[in-house]
Image (tube, rainbow, N blue to C red; front, side, top):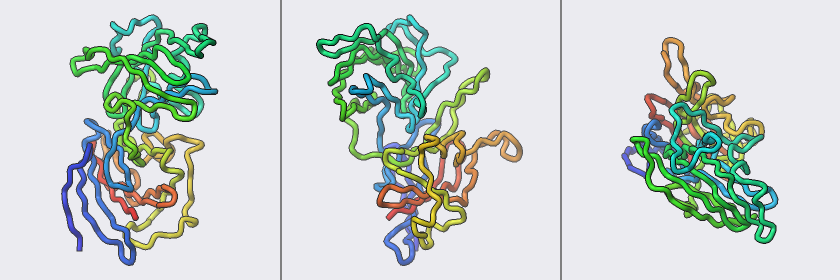
Amino acid sequence: MKKASILLLTGLWLVQCTSPVPDSPSTVEQFISPDLNQEPTFLNLKEGISVPTWDLKFSAGNQGYLVDLNEQAGTVVCPADSGVDFATAAFPGTISFQTDTMDQLAIGERWLLPTSYNPMDHSIQGRGQVYFLRCADYRRLKLEVLRATPTEFQFRWAEEQEDHTFLPEQAETVSCTADAPARWSPSLGSALSDVDWHLGLVSKPITVPNVGTFYMPSVQINTETVSRYALWEGGDLEGDLPAASTFTWQDFRGETQPLGYGGSQALLVYHPEPPYNHKVIVEHPEQILVLDLNPDLLLVQFLDYDSGVAVIQLRRP
């Protein structure tokens, strides 16, 4: 017998219909996302909760003084024109965002001035480059990295308000080492939760050259917690789970987000043609996504997507 309850979790409306799987300790649960046009959700599937995540990663070591974006959570950036002053910098009316790829970092070491390197303390100064940042939680910031040493980064940032003015500038220093980079977000600083996410549902900016930037729903996988995935055609969430060896497993080495919007196996697809008429739909609702969390396998089925709201079913141990 099924039981239904409605819970409000951090950043997520969860409608939970719990159905025991016969001859198994597993249950099947149903989740309804928030309106992804207004807020994202990053799910820890083991715990069944929504958690915050980071936007920038600062690392100092043999690879240099690097700034990485949380590409898999949807963090994107746009460099301001050269010579733009931080105090007066404002988001342009037309913006083309960039993110990290497998071949290139959007910020990386572009923030620094190579000739400013100090061999005495191994510090280096910024070159005055301002960046416009759209965070994983949709906040919009302007940011400038000022200085780095082998143990810390110094930067300043300001958050854009709804009227496109900025809140007062904030100075930030984060500690890092070669083995332990600093992960930062404007809401939590560098004091991020130990609870990590596996599956993200976001509204992601997609820039079409000579047309503009559009915000489209995307399924994001955290490749730091999910080692590989499989698509189970015609599977049954409440049936017997096949052995892991029977699935055709795929990793993320060739494509960082194959299941995300525009990916080779995108789960949510935009259809301009009739009868959908410019709607995003779940392309294969009968398909079950199998995620390897090592050692656990989690099964996710996307049932519906409409006007920013996704409905999924989840089977977890």
